[in-house]
Image (cartoon, rainbow, N blue to C red; front, side, top):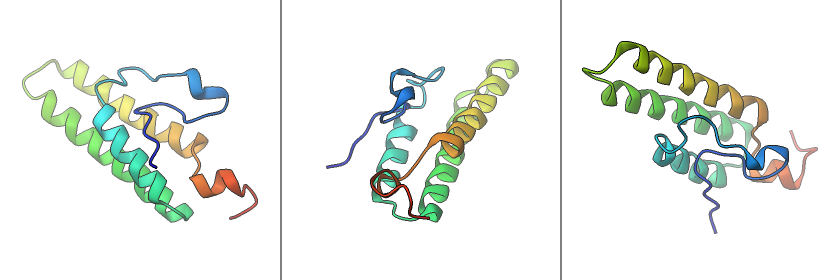
Length: 102
C-alpha cells in the first residue's frame, strides 16, 4: 500500500516537522509520494523531485496571478526550499531497506 504523508518526512528525526504552507502544496506532495513509492532507482527519485518542483511552481504561478508580487516570490522560494530538502534528506523505499545500494 502506498504511504502518503503530504508534505513531510515519512520517518526518522524529521517526521514531526511540517514545512511552511504545507497545506497549500498537499496535492503536489501526495503525487510526489506516489512517485517515490513507485521509484526504484536514484534517477526515479530525481525525476520525482524535479516533477514536484515543477508542479509546485506551476501552482504558485497560477494561484498568484493578480496577487501580491512579494507573496508569489516567497512561495517560489519555498518551492526551491522543499526541493533542496528532498534532495538532501529524501530516500527511496528501496534505499531505506538496503542503505548500501547505490
